[in-house]
Length: 530
Image (cartoon, rainbow, N blue to C red; front, top):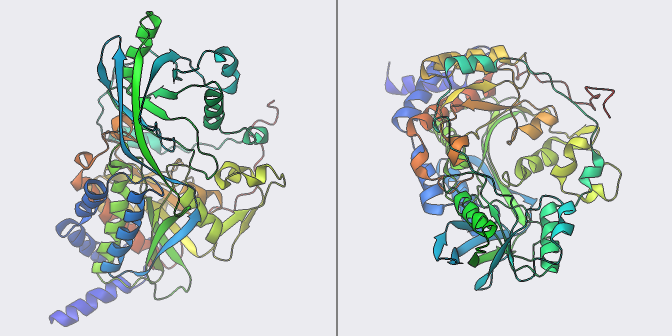
């Protein structure tokens, strides 16, 4: 066969529809070739991590990432590349910081400013007071004792030593155990809790009124790891006092000295900047246009924001690079899918899935207000699950499948079907070509905590892949060592190949993936609970 005819025939095969269960293995051969022999996934990940670094929402680094990812999509030839805005709040970035104990002996401490807290305006110095506070009810105990002090707000513990290996992959037995249907549980929404003011702001107000200089908290992981996560990004809700996180071992040393009547003195320096040029954050969207099924589309997404203790590699430059690589692979192959394939990079995930929720609310479905003036002014994600009924928008039925990547650098081992027993056998067919690559599990479990969940709450088929855990949860998630060094190239190439295949299957199937019923207000699982 002449080369031109061969290329034409292959392109036609990629464009031909397949049934929901059928898998086009010729197309998968080409995806495998492009994804394994010509991959750019690690170059994408390296630029986001080594070159740009941590990408806190609305920071200068995130603005750079928003522009760079759009340009890459355009360079690869994708269509309708755009930045889709939603209201978020202030940007924030760290210039430099340090922490030092000066008495009873000098020693440098491992520390990081807590996100969206103000700087120290130079070096501040003061004795510490260990005053653990987790609720406003703790304030009375410390009133009148904090003036001029640096307040240690975490109750110190004794530490822990790991009893399991930090790095691991799923065993066949563990994967088999995942395929167990778990019934959902429901309770009446605790609306009164929604009225409670953010404790971080109440604590800041109390400490400032008491004349404290600053506060420090203990890292929730041992091993010198730091995180620096904070959530006071809303305009008009910025704390007054500097806040810093200390490595757990350093924090406990200070607490022991204070208990031994050798009260430490600290020097803290935190130089940070707030960025108020634009309170909107931006999701980045790009398309491979469909040739049929007017208006219908399938989508893959990952959040590209991160915390800034390190470079946000496994959380979630890894998932972002895989989604972008799937886009590059499919575009390089010249696919002409029946349905449009959309690629989404979500912003503001780390502060509460803000970007994906904004997309759902804007394009897919919204929820009726609670009818309470106070509650209806709260951020959307605070009240979303408590509001009924769901009100589908015109485009609700157009999104027929969404696939999410946000579990680190581990290879794909399967997919969570989210209780959708009609979709499960279809996924088994789609995974069959990749069994030799370690991906074969279809779990009926639901997966939470990432950007597919709000699609699920309005009845859109959204799914999260199962990935090997590696050392994601044990030591990398949100920490100061989440750098490029911990990415696994073979795993990310495998994930990009599988994602590209799933997208093409979903885009070309004769029938869209089965949907769950549109959710309605559930009844309480225990009707007699108080």
